[in-house]
Length: 113
Image: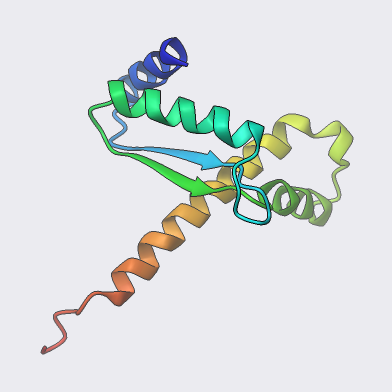
């Protein structure tokens, strides 16, 4: 995982990214299955070599969400593999950004407080 992590960190730097978000494939009962354990090792490797924050986001049901988006667009899942993966990645990022919004909503604002 270290070589792959270094490649990701280089790519993020070349594209002026300031953080990394990784989808974690938790089981529905919140446990870590074999793929999640591999992903956690990759996240650990990223954190060892990245100078920016590395965040983990729950990716459960994001492929289902991608399938729904494809269905709404009238596309067949079997013919849209790349689109399905890209849409699932989009869903992961949307979920991550939603957690940031919820955290910001919990902070006291400057509305006269």
